[in-house]
Picture 1: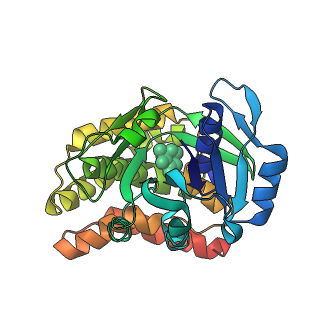
Picture 2: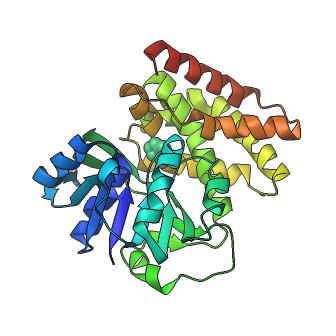
Length: 306
Ligand code: KPL
């Protein structure tokens, strides 16, 4: 199954290496020519959960010179704010049967994806795996997690035959027709972990400390109210447990928001806690805790000049 992955961040590197190891022809489309050249020369250096390190040969090209050709699977693994550029590459990569999986954190990309349904079969992927990009071609798999894939715009559909081999890669990859609920569940996990770890410059595991109990609870309660207004029913207790499980499984990980801050990159806060605040305003629900986190992250971004 010919696969292209747009995005050379932590998850893009991890999945490129994984698929190449599993024998799939993979092309990674990176933002810069420098990253593509490095990967073509030295491969992707992947450190697994057990600490074993290996160089994996993966073909790479830059977004300026996409040479991948038509692809059966297309994984869009860029951040929400980089989606317009990534989406502009899709016509060059997609044939009528291409299965396009969107792997963004947070929410806000629904409209963009809906607009593509005429040219490709589109899906949302939700993952709780942790990965850390250490260098442009070096990635550490820092946390085991689950991955869910489902059709979006939501439609009644079983696993499409072309995607079946993807689900055979791991027991931890599953199909879910109600993928929007998974998106909201993951949103809750990111609302809890990402801003707190980025503000305090701590690894995910430290969020298990009792001093974060109250704030974690408040973040989730606000999110559950907003989700209900949007027609998504979530159980606050189950969400708390899920967030704690992810904190535990990705304990060694630096959240993507902390990684962005450290690299001087703008964070995805507007698509994470910012979504709760925006929808809270729409439905007239107060969301003071999420609003405060958004404001503090923006202040920190301004401080470091991104
Ligand atoms: O999605 C993540 C992120 O960092 O953005 C988690 C699951 C919290 C792993 O770090």
